Length: 265
Image (cartoon, rainbow, N blue to C red; front, side):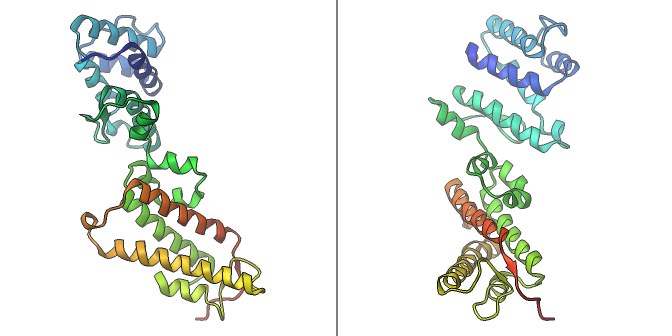
C-alpha cells in the first residue's frame, strides 16, 4: 500500500506543523528513511521529498506509518493535550481515505475506508469540535474537556451533569445534591434561584418547567450513571450530543438566574 500524492502531501503539511527541524531529523533516522532535502528545505516539503522517494522506491508506506506513530506518540504531548487531539484529528482526516486510523495510544489500525469528505470528517472529528460548532455553553467544556477530546461519551455526560449540579450549588450556596438540590433551590413556594421575574403565572410555569427539566436530566443521566456499570449503560455519540445540548441550555438559563433569598442554615 502507498499513499496517493494529495494524501501524502496533506500528511506532510500536518506533520511539519507539529515537529521541529531537529525532531524531523531524528525521526527520519529512527525509521531509516533518507533525508533527501535536509534542513535547508521547509519542513513539510522536506518530509514530502523523503516520504515520496521512499515509497516510490519500495512501493510501500510502512516506514511512513512508523514515522507518523513516532511524531504522534502521546508521550510527546503530555503537557499539551489540546495539541495532541488537534494533531490526531487532522491526521485521521487524511488517513480515513486510506482506511486507516491513528489511535490515542499512538498506534494505527485499519478501518472502513472513507469515500467522501463528510465521511472522513465523521471518522476524524472529536465530540468537542462538534459541540463547538453548535455554540455549546462554555461551562460544558470546563467540566468535561478531557472526556470530550477523547470521545468518551459516557463520562462526558456524567461529568457535565456533575458540573451542572456544582454550578447550581455555587450560585445558590447550597450543599445539597441531585433532586433534593433542585427541589430546594427552584421550589415553587420559596425558591432560592429564579430564571425570570417569577410574577406572572406564565413565568412561574416556565420556572417550574425548568425545575422539572433539571430533575429529569438528573434522574435519567446522573443517578443512572452513578450506579450502573459503564458496560451496561450505552451512550452513543448522538445521545451525548443531545444530552449535552440540553445541559448547555440549562447553563444558559442559569446565566440570567437571580438569587432572591439566602439558604437557611
